[in-house]
Amino acid sequence: MATWNVDGAHSSVGFSAKHMMFTTVRGTFSDFDATLEFDPENPGDASVDATIQITSVNTGAPDRDNHLRSADFFDVENFPTMTFKSTRVEPKSSTEAVVYGDLTIRGNTKEVPLNVTFLGEGVNPWGQTVGGFTATTTINREDFGLKWNQTLETGGVLVSKEIKIELDIQAAKVSETASV
Image 1 (cartoon, one colour):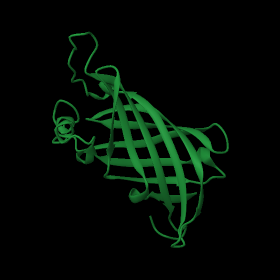
Image 2 (image 1 turned 30 degrees about the vertical axis):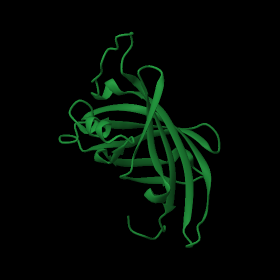
Image 3 (image 1 turned 90 degrees about the horizontal axis):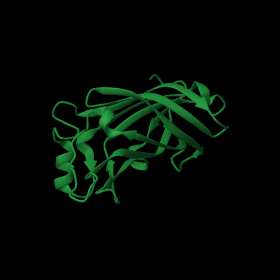
Image 4 (image 1 turned 135 degrees about the vertical axis):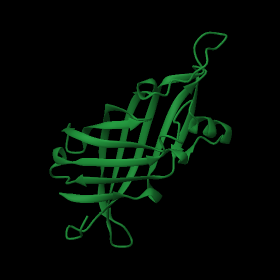
């Protein structure tokens, strides 16, 4: 089993939510770190341990980003990070698996499934073996204590409960002889 470190410069952690029930607002987190234990020949033995710095949230609107950091949403003063730690992997094919894990946001931990696709591996121009992965899931933000909302005059709410998460990951393989 090889250890892989996520390359933040070539990876993205994104999310989207419905605004006013009909438009989509997208955002990213730019400060994150993750380690994967992964062997393409034995994907069922894989594991993931990731941490996201919530202060790095960016939706392109500074006022909205500050509101997301506030106690109404993430409460970064008390909960500066969110984490994901895998608990099991169910391979679906040679390149696809469901990675179940404990997602913790605002001190609330729930098991969530990540639908993961292994895109392949190769050697980059600097001689390092890298691999590509995508992962998606959908969560109910209220399950994690993110309950702020406003009822709209026309019916519905300002922010959807459903949050879609999309990861595009490039990870660099750590030498098998290196200490981790």
